[in-house]
Amino acid sequence: SVIPQLDKILLEEMKNNNQVHTGMLPKLENAFDATTHDVEVMIGHALSLEKIISGQAGTRIVHAG
Figure (tube, one colour):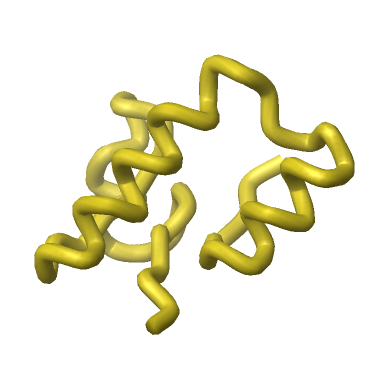
């Protein structure tokens, strides 16, 4: 399922509950790293690009801190 917004706290909870699989971990860690450099990160299906840009689809990665 799509999570509208993801922060580090939720990511840690999901990792502890085995809800995030190995292949996604490096992608998410890199996404969080990018947010520390004032980059907005959205993750979603490439075919939904317009919906992702408008906020109607995808997951927004939020830097908390």
